[in-house]
Amino acid sequence: MTHDIIHKTLEEVRQTNMPDYLNEVADFSWNNARALLDGFPGGKLNIAYEAIDRHVNSGKGDKVALRWIAKDGQRTDFTYRDLEQKSNQFANVLKTLGAETGDTVYSLLGRVPELYIAALGTLKAGCVFCPLFSAFGPEPIKVRMEIGKAKFLITSRKLYKRKVEGLRDELPKLEEILLVDGGEVDTGLRDLDGLMKSASPNFAVEPMAQEDKALLHFTSGTTGKPKGVVHVHEAVVAHHVTGQIALDLRPDDIYWCTADPGWVTGTSYGIIAPLTNGVTMIVDEAEFDTNRWYQTLAEEHVNVWYTAPTAIRMLMKAGSELPKAHNLSELRFMASVGEPLNPEAVIWGNEVFGMPFHDNWWQTETGGIMIANYASMDIKPGSMGKPLPGITAGIVEKFKDGVREAAKPLAIGELALKPGWPSMMRAYLNEDERYKKCFSDDWYLSGDLAMRDSDGYFWFVGRSDDVIKSAGHLIGPFEVESALMEHEAVAEVGVIGVPDETVGQIVKAFVVLKLNYQPDEELRLDLIGHARKQLGPAVAPKDIAFRKNLPKTRSGKIMRRLLKARELGLPEGDISTLESDEQ
Ligand code: ATP
Ligand code: MG
Image 1 (cartoon, rainbow, N blue to C red):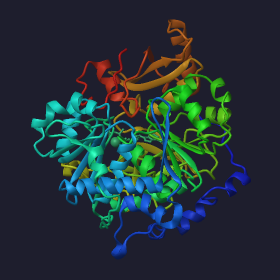
Image 2: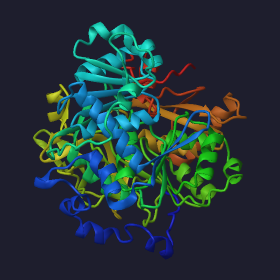
Image 3: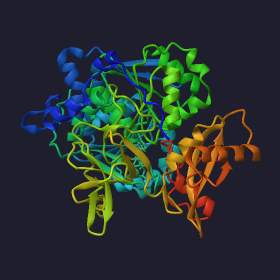
Image 4: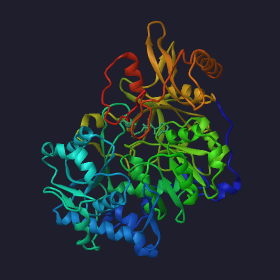
């Protein structure tokens, strides 16, 4: 299925950070990208210095860095100077409590200012920051803290009582627990606020070596047990420049990344890239809410908005009238990541907001955006775009003795990248074998299948685990899902392969309907008919089941492996990141 290309006008193209993609690809070098940052003598650097202190030192201390919207709607502004001083205080608190370079500091917090201050202060002190998603239960918290040898934990009283108190004996390496709302604290707990107040707002930021560890992020657990991915300080070079190139960030922008820092997007592009680029970033403490989101976009005059397909689909489900009731004229660029973005969603964006969503692709492992639709680029709805300047991406096929780049255009193969960019993972913590398996013949293998068209655009096919083989065809769930998404009744859909003696696997779709649609046999047949028309009988689903919800990770990704396990009555495997999904 192809859709009309969304063309950019010359005027639009001229105003972007990267008007000429091919020129940038030819001229780009990571050394030049690094020169955009200050660094420290001897090739050292520190992510937090580049994010905060650099701007204060160049006279931008009074600019708002973070506008925090509390659940009750109250706004609090933090300037770059505020964040500088508070992160310095936090670094001093850590040092007073005996933190050493390389110690791991975990956070278990909602999107509150202390989370952002802790992240920056931890990096300033030379410690490794690991943000945990606050909705995790005790067991996933324990496992993640064990893997990363958590020494410090920043959390709230409520989260501590509910989730951590019962685990303390099982975490002997955990030395200090700091409560953001400490007040009167019991033994073994500390009041962060009190400690911050008595800490100096001055701190000499630790100059770190390029390869010193900075961040530990756990993957989403969509395909199985989450991996602990290690990133280093040099990664900031990629965060910074990809923020400019792929998100078109400019210093006067108001930018809203809706991801939680518990997932890599919420840190790489929800803390680091916006701050190194000196923008004002919006942080909303509350969870998704259609009206609130449109209000936030309008009232905060958001220019650049980075969100995810699940949220976009929920907005679509709520209809096209709502956004029209808000003044969204300041919005300039919209991007999406985390899951394949159905062409339908890109086109909807274009109709409703007057601009398409720009899909981009990357992973916890890659640390930063790798393939993207740029502000200056014509958009082919459904495509992930083209590799970032400085990134070599390929479609590879596996052989017994290694991998080779697919020779034919449009060949489906594994999406692979040439290692060497700054934000590439340096390890899966405690899982050397799994890490080594990601590399072959000087390629990093992503585990995703994709293809490249003759214009150099990349198209996502599916995760290699999710791809369906049916009667000699290789079918990507994304293609089938996108076709069904075009039907007016469909809000969301997940597609799997169900084993079948004759054809290998048959395609089965699980469909969530839009409001005002009732699941019945007539609609089921209509959907099958629609898919057949779009995809042909070999690829269209043979079976469709209606669901109220689909199982998703807490970061909003459809867990097709769970749809499959449940369909086949197989064990569900690791479900530590599963969002509750009562049917
Ligand atoms: P796990 O590795 O634990 O199974 P995960 O792969 O979902 O979890 P992340 O690193 O958060 O963990 O997600 C990266 C994956 O998300 C990619 O490998 C890809 O499958 C999917 N993804 C991200 N962006 C896109 C996109 N634009 N289009 C299609 N898929 C995407
Ligand atoms: Mg993954």
